[in-house]
Length: 217
Image 1 (cartoon, rainbow, N blue to C red):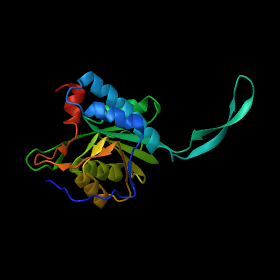
Image 2: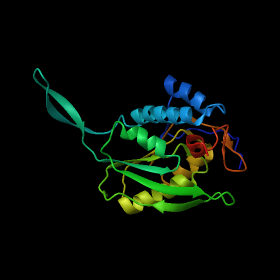
Image 3: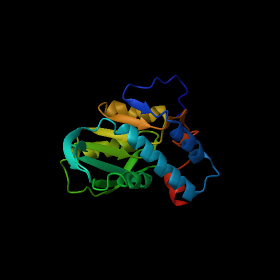
Image 4: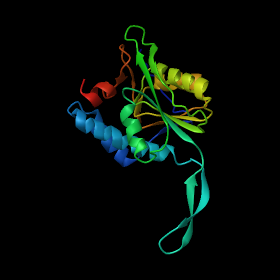
């Protein structure tokens, strides 16, 4: 499972260099960061990454009436949706809903079998909206890549999603390769790319299990 060879970052993979992201990521990784603080850091990093990943969202002009006069402005001109991979993606979705409260959220439950390391879907209840122009798939960890591929397979099949971005905190090179091999049209936005996976499929050095650390389980 260990892959220590050189890894060249593909052109559609974006790793944030923002000082706040890197500072908060170091705190988030720490074994001594308790769950309440971990959830707060996940929320803050998710907002910063989403800010960077959403810079190319199309906008349309409109006119706004201020208390003084009318002035030109802009509004988002596409329909945005979120797919949160349970459990770990919940905190990311809640953060983004603070700034885009009207977007639909698709919660999908996928876990990784500890023996085979293959994804197993256990919950899938899509919203009624199927006319989404841009979907963000939210999962803090991109490890083997199997969960992300399964989620995007389902998203494309049921929503017919044509433009998808994966938003995560940490990835392993193997996960990036697996995701881009299955879905080369998906862009990946991260806070860090780590060294490799261990024999249990965990990212090294990583931050542990993001779901367990969020919910203190």
